[in-house]
Length: 453
Image (tube, rainbow, N blue to C red):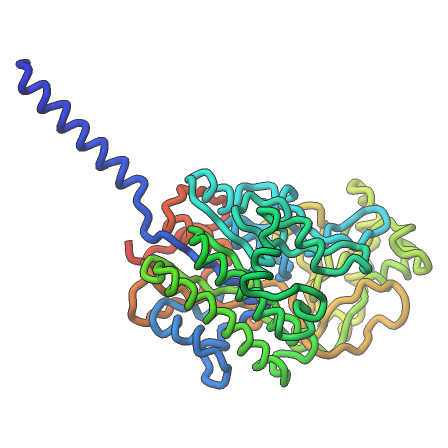
């Protein structure tokens, strides 16, 4: 082979390899903003009565889902962890909002990121050399996030709710920087879940960091919809006001992307963790265990052989000794012998179904009530007690418990498109595709046709 041919071959090979590397590193978009509305229901963007013009504008120029199937239990912390892992709770390890403690419960929640047992989108973003931001996201204390104000509080109520966030922020001084630039002084009055000013502050945090630092991936958790649906139910008088505040926060974030000059390279995903069901009564399955002598009604968790850990509208049976087949047989016999009038209020979810839905692997069975019934962990008093408002936690086959999904912006077709139902675990693969993260998930799948490739 002469020198000319050799040089030409080397040049051609170099061009091919260079183009291959470029193609491998090419992102569909530069920025993804993942907004989770706690208690987000599909009808909020499908029905005209809800005051969410920003969300509806995104829906009209993007892709929406009729519903998003959640996890079991359909509560906040396991759901949000599924969003950033593409994994079900059995895989990622965040089974409830609070860990089930076999000793006397401490009331702590799953705050720390190192409790997640599988990689997350934050890890993948960092590995790619990209930047991230997160605001009030569950299970994010110590997360590998470039700009992070986590959702966290302490068991010392006198310490307040702001200082724990400040103690665990990244980088140090971020909250003070935002207080000076946009927030004003953060305290129990200006950032309080009982009032809608909290949504304004969260939106301002995200908007400031997006405009100032332009992170590639951002997660934001807005809570007012959940708070007031718990208090008043699905159609409560405060719910439209909560949604208006949430929508206003989303508008601030969108405007920040426009001011920063990145709007045309940004994808917005608006989703949630669960829907809501109105309730009128609460069932107390630990009363049955007290009747069997399996739980001491006077001391409850201090003396027990088995215990129903309630999580919203569901209850999960734990054995103190996992090999205690005698106690489990007694409980099964008790459930089987209940009168029809009580049996019709719930169904028993067995081991096989629990494994399929990917719930806590330490659970031997669960109780899922019919809509209208919640759960209480109490072991004393009447089996049923009055409740009001709304709740979640139900097995995700209940339509009302599905959350919503809207995706719009860069990488998404500009004409309105509707799909049926996707899983909560399917959103992380979508984000990975948009940012070219090469993020492998165990339980979720990538749905082609939602974004333009």
